[in-house]
Image (cartoon, helix red, strand yellow):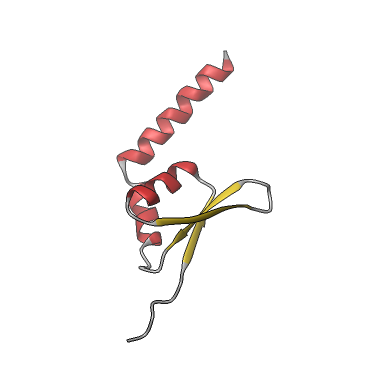
Length: 78
């Protein structure tokens, strides 16, 4: 039986990274991208990351993150 191909997925979105981890993807490492942002690198050998990204975009977690960002803007605008 062939060994599964090692596949990775990256994101700089903290909320999405938390969701991927919550849904079972294993965090492999963090690294800096070309804009000096922290990128989260996950093991995606099960090839589910794209599906989970769409699931996140339609989830209550995404809505919660949006509301949290909005409230932070209100705090820092004052």
